[in-house]
Length: 131
Image (cartoon, rainbow, N blue to C red; front, side, top):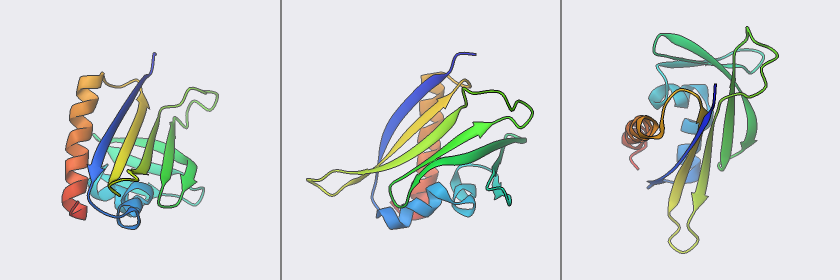
């Protein structure tokens, strides 16, 4: 299946230190991103939403700056074009405004659907962090 790369930026009125745990920890992500998120002893994240389990590993991490979750199917160990979600915190040097850049590489939705889904998710995140 052909994958689609969706990229969007959202202004968040908070500090990197406040928002980053919501982007990078199981407890933070379960508050806004998925119905539930757990992590096992092998550092595999289990994102539960839509009554399905989605497994991912962190493949890039820079504290208070960037995190990338690469999703995989445990039943298809030879698959190599994995879907991923990447969160990057970027700062406008002039205004010190923080932007959350979302990169969603998947085969699930078209851009309009993804835009709607992410706007809803980011709105929920902003309500939680007050940003």
